[in-house]
Every structure is written in structure tokens, then in C-alpha cells.
Image 1 (cartoon, rainbow over the protein chains, first blue to last red):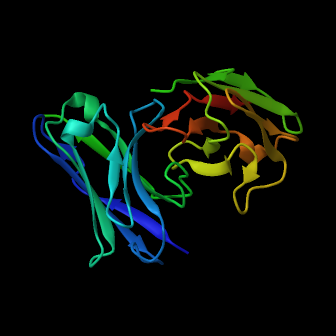
Image 2 (cartoon, rainbow over the protein chains, first blue to last red):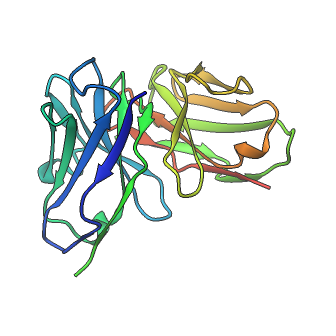
Length: 119
Length: 106
């Protein structure tokens, strides 16, 4: 069965770019009509949809973050990525990568990775 | 953005209780409604999608109902492993949005 694993720096300085990668195992990122999404959860808070990349390469993202977000997929490495620029303390959160067969269906989740924005 | 609200924000229950959580959308989302369960320190888990379809492996004591703007998650007989926080989510229009969560504890 497919498994997802987030990786990236746990600490990012303000104004820098947060970069996370989601490695996919047990299945091909281009092997089916799936949506590969990023979700975040601020400490002790609820869930926020960041955006997705479709297996075809098309993307969509949250307008509240759109100007700062890049979501992409690397089929050769079987992974997809999130880049969030100009981060502030408000971007401190646990970031999850997910997979779904429909845009908003988040059926498979990674374990999550905490990213702290601090100098 | 579509706003999702949930009630109650928390509830205390006992094993064997029937538990009902309500979710409301700020506009019609047809049947694009999912429910997730999250335990402390863990990733959320998809329980139900399209209002009432159980994700594979989810026990049948979980059920969902509703349409348009008003939805319900019911746990027919609460089990010890069901103590968690539950979130509803709309996937009708981006940005997909979640409710604030309902914490179910003792």
C-alpha cells in the first residue's frame, strides 16, 4: 500500500523559503489519477488546505498563500514538493502530505513534519 | 471561502454512548463533505467521504448524513479507540476548508 513521508528542515528563518518533499513509496506518483496535496496544522489548531498537484502536473492552491506557494511533482524521484517563500512565524505548523482520488479527498497521509519559523 | 462550523466544540461521553457531531457549511456544498478523525500526535484519518461513504476499513459504527449545508457524523456505540478530535471538510470549491473540530473525550 502507498505510504507518504515528509522531509525537510525543521527550522526555517523568517523571510526565507520553506522547502518540503513528500516521498511516495508503494505506488507511482504518475501511476493513477491522484491528487497529491499539502495540508498544515498550526500548533494546537485546526487544519488548513495548502494546495495540490495532480498527476498530470496541474496545480491549485489556497489563495491566502498562492503568491508564496509552489507545488510540484518529480516523477523521476516519485516525490512531490512544497515551497513556501517569505515565511513568518505564522507559517510555523505541522505540514502533512496526502493523496486522494478526488481533489479534496485526503485518503492517505504522511506522518507530518513540524516546521518552526524562527531566527 | 466556504466557512465550516461544527458543534459542539467538545463533548464528554462514555463507552457505548451514541455520539452525534454536527457540521454546517456557509453555503451549499452538495454532497462534497468528508469527516476525519485525529488522535493526539497523529495525522488525521479519513473516515467518511461524500457525506456517507465509509472509507475502507472504517468500522460500521461510524455513519454520516446530510446534504447541502447541514451534515452529521454519528458514532452508534462509542469505543475506547474513538476518543479523538473529529473534523469535517468541504471539497466542493477550493480552497477546501475544514471545520474547527470536535473533541470527544471522557
